[in-house]
Amino acid sequence: MSRKITGATLVAGVAGAPVRHSLSPIIHNAWIEAAGLDAVYVPFAPSSDGFRRFADGLRGGVVRGLNVTVPFKEDALAIADELSERAALAGAVNLLVFAADGRIHGDNTDGLGLLGAFAAQAPGFDPAAGPVAIIGAGGAARGAAAAFVTAGAPEVRIVNRTLAKAEGIGEALGAKVRAFSLDAAARAFDGVTAVINATSAGLLDASLDLPLEATPSPAVVMDMTYKPLETPLLARARELERRTVDGLEMLVRQAVPSFEAFFGRTPPAAVDVRALCLAAIGGQA
Ligand code: ATR
Image (tube, rainbow, N blue to C red; front, side, top):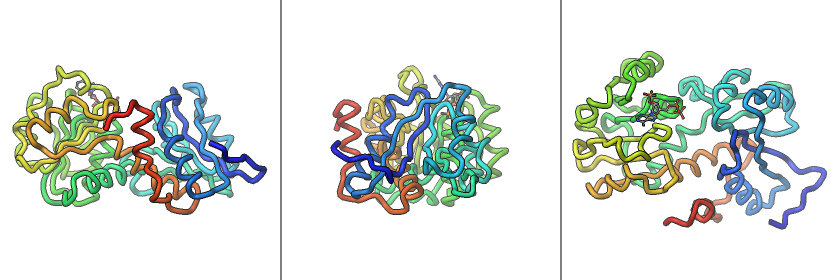
């Protein structure tokens, strides 16, 4: 990169620990460069108990905003002075914007990323057309459930190892959400339009053997994990001739509204940030 940093360069970034392998700097800096902006997007790695102090120090907008990743999403939710409706519903914040008046706005762009990934890789998929099943009951699962409820899904089935956590999402999001234990996955998959893996590590471990054959053949299978790009779950889905959506597409799509919040313009469409990310994670197609 041969961009010059000037006295007027705008700064935004991503905070996480570790943040070293984040793909967000690759995505945002490619867009910044293609748009010819005098701006830079940098990684920040506060200590595990230092995020709030760090973010507090940015009040006023010395840094325009931050994407927030593991393990700081809960701190980000707590430090925000106000939340967008979608962040409140998701119970999670992945974007903080530092206003000039000192206030911190919390937002969540993961839901848009998720639905955008479906639109891109499973054209014609309609989130309102039938029930969907989500595996996992952590923050990522709740965010996905909130996005589908908002998009009009008639039923969202949360399938989780720990049933009580799945029930907790139902309490937060209302009657359209139903909880299932993992051993009831086949029942949860009956008649769904989509299955989404939102567990952190679980399904990389092929021992978690989900009965994908219980889904109807038009169902779409999505995995939020993108390392590897084709997870064991997506490989199995392809064997069964189900359409698939990958987690890298979600990552790229959630970055779009973040870029807009930082820099007040849409990212240039001409730059293929997905290809840049693929090159960075090892070149799988
Ligand atoms: P995040 O906030 O990123 O969603 P999390 O809160 O740690 O992450 O949630 C991870 C989810 O993955 C949980 O629902 C967890 O199941 P439990 O609620 O039973 O702990 C699920 N998970 C992780 N590893 C798993 C595995 N090997 N098998 C099944 N579920 C797993």
